[in-house]
Image 1: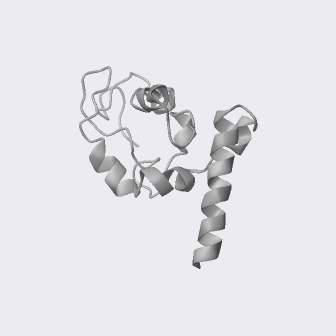
Image 2: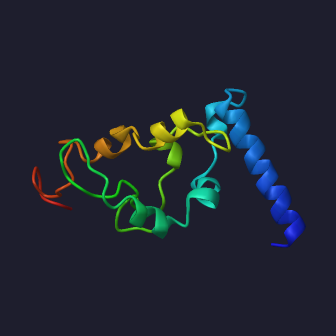
Length: 122
């Protein structure tokens, strides 16, 4: 990517995030994970940074995982986080630290992260 197109891409991303956070874009135009990772990434660093996250079950594990876990697919950030303006406000930062785990609980239905405790792993 050349410098000019990189700048245009970042400006378009910033505008989309600001409009979405302000409720001026419909939710289906939420930024893709790679857009969020432009500031919060790379993904490996995000995983490492959140490795001490404590779930309500008391388990300590990063919420940032490949889904399905054996893949290299990154879940959409908006499954758990609300997009925020740049720069984020104090309440935006607090919300990022308190994600909605409902997406994880679609598979981890007993709300723990120790696989194989409720049925055999397929």
